[in-house]
Image (cartoon, rainbow, N blue to C red; front, top):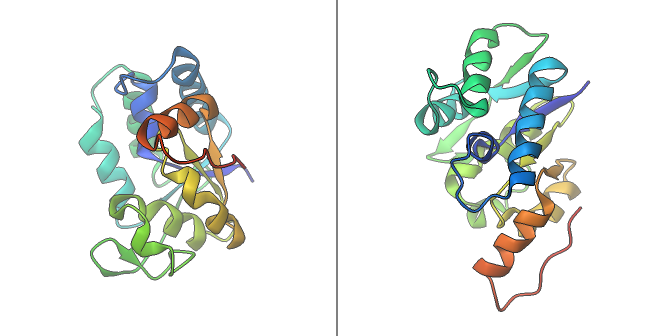
Length: 175
């Protein structure tokens, strides 16, 4: 099965809503979203946390790739061949029982915690597609130890973003 959890920034980059993303990154994100629509299974939570974030940051009536992906997702959310919904339990705001590494959870950006929780809650532990949030370079090794993988769609861009954001730190390895 080709299931994936898609971080919101993949939609934003495909929509050209990330000013620093390279043309190669925009193309890669666009291709990933089109692949997901045509061949993949998109995994979201049943409480619509992920879909709500997509709705807040894109335009369902827009014509850009990320907007079209959201519209497709909403049209297919009940089609279990294309979209899987999993239950994640929020014990306090942005803190999930299903988060794969409870020791890592407090250092993870609160709005991003739903993505590893959803991946971990799914039987197949699908990869999380990540485009532009360079902090994930610090988190992917601990997630991988739990069986949750991160696929960096734009490795060159994300490494560049990391160097700018953390100029005094060594660049972490990519998976």
